[in-house]
Picture 1 (cartoon, rainbow, N blue to C red):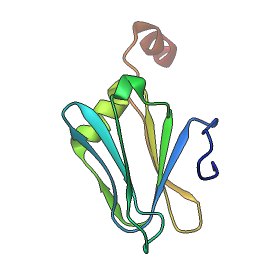
Picture 2: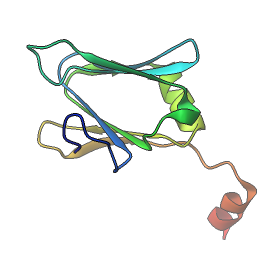
Picture 3: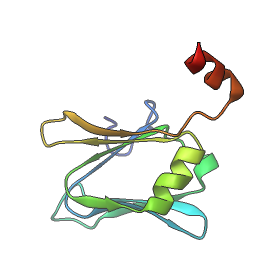
Picture 4: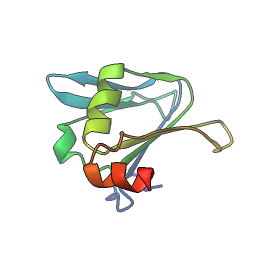
Length: 107
């Protein structure tokens, strides 16, 4: 995990806390983080193609819009849901739709 005010070099965004969210507005992916319940939540807005994160990890109680899931999967961004102990619960990845992948599955 990246320290505060330092550059993220893992290409992973960790959203934690009560009320975190991923939504879409004006063709931008909005990432809202409520890591600390006693301070104001942080919000990031990115065009999906310009977003520096390859994976978004969610922990706690929050929501993800279906439009955000669709947009992130179309652009090869993974969303991972983990429980309170850090154990993965759900992996949301895009579908493979290339002809090469279909041939490999058939073989």
